Image (cartoon, rainbow, N blue to C red; front, side, top):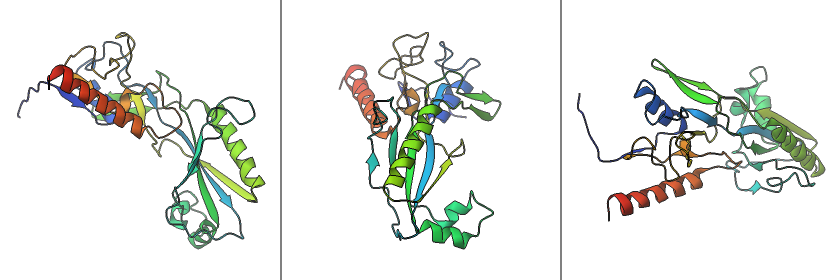
Length: 248
């Protein structure tokens, strides 16, 4: 075994693995004075929505080219925020067959050529009971869905819009935990070391040389892909390390 003692450690293994690594590295978990490492796991609420028109032929191979944020800040009628709608990468017969095992694949393939496929995405709210735990060599995920009223509301609003657009059939499929989507939380940032493992720059309150720069530092999942936010955060932390720690 080789032992390495780095000057700085930057952890970026993802919301599940980063939390699991810290929890497995000490009896109470590294950087876990707050008991918040592994907690507040979030995973976007997702539904596939297939708009079907027997008169339509959709030969797109990859159709994820636009999104709809009309219902992001409100339901469009003065009600509460709902979420984001975007095109889903084109479904096919084999993809549909994975969930509809009783249906002939040829029939599903024919149906898939007559669909426009949407992804309904809503925010999963932070809950300390949604968490990543480590049991021996096993990583255990305890995910509690949240904000499903908004999710169902966005499905109803989008279904109505598609039918008004002329699609006679609209089918939906709610994704479960087997379809991970933008997993985040678990090592959140904050100003209070008793409530968060990291400071606003991603440095562990308990260890001056430990930084976390992946999706685990997020305190909210919002209702869109967080990749650009995570990248911006990592760049800011890297710049801080360069300027304040390495003095370059």
